[in-house]
Image (cartoon, rainbow, N blue to C red; front, side, top):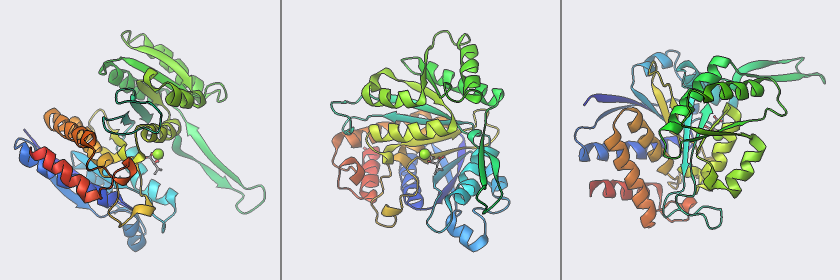
Amino acid sequence: MSLHKIAVIGGDGIGPEVTREACTVLKVLQNVLPELKLDFTEFEWGSEYFVKNGRMMPEDGLEQLKTFDSILFGSAGSLEVPDHITLWGLRLKICQHFDQYANVRPSRLLPGIQSPLKNLSAGDLDWVIVRENTEGEYSGAGGRVHPQLPQEVGLDVSVFTRSGIERVMRFAFKLAASRPRKQLTLVTKSNAQRHGMVLWDEVFEELKSEFPKISTDRMLVDAITTRMVLQPQTLDTIVATNLHADILSDLAAALSGSLGMGPTANINPEGTFPSMFEPIHGSAFDLVGKGLANPLGAFWSCVMMLDHLQEPQAASKLMKTIEDVCQLGKNLPLDLGGKSRTTEVTSAICDALGD
Ligand code: IPM
Ligand code: MG
């Protein structure tokens, strides 16, 4: 069993609060499963680093990260630095330079967790959203011209390439094939956006024949929001563009209990670069320093990290423990209707892991 080197970037807001808890949980898991060998290195990069150094990470930051097997990330975004700077200086920089083109976001209503949807029980909502993660609406292409004049122009150009679409779709088809229902839904807006989105539809149609065991359908992004709310049982794996899946995954997380639960894997499937794992909740300024953040999204992201590191036993043990603690319901954080502080949730998980 090899040693996995993990780079930990807590970043901003509640990010460091939840990655610290995640490391605590992983260390306990390591004690319980002696074959699991993890080594953590912390990087204090983010907005505070920016205020002191004028950049979100050192110039050779990517070079430093390259030597790791995985990255555990907290959040980027603070009140002091504009969001587009924090985002492009750290998280997006890592995603793009490390070609982490598949952003995987599972949402599952766990036993013991209440969905805001009436009468929804565990098992009724079990989705994985695959978000294209390196191009599309987040390509960074565009510009500003005629500054400060009434005719000032701001352009954000969505860039969709056949190769970029194909690779993320192949990833989504394979992921759908690994799930019991073998079902993949393509989300676009190809009625109104008649170039890139139509290309998405065409590539999907071409790839379908390679995956005959997968049942497929196509939805427009506006229409799928109502299906997510009204018929959640009819969806399984979803593939969508960077922006569409960004929006849908927040909705998915809320419907499965809370944004605080949502995990993410930014995957470089070829393994050329490290992949990065993070909760989707972001900085949550209102919670910073209060000890009330929900660490479960970070823990669930660690499950995804362990899976990616090919440690299936550790991954399923941690996931089962998260499920058990939720089902028991005694140590739920505030956003899930409980009363527990961040560290109390962590202790409940650690105690349960030791059993
Ligand atoms: C997410 C977040 C980020 C994104 C923000 C912080 C820019 O919303 O991970 O979903 O859109 O990528
Ligand atoms: Mg988002």
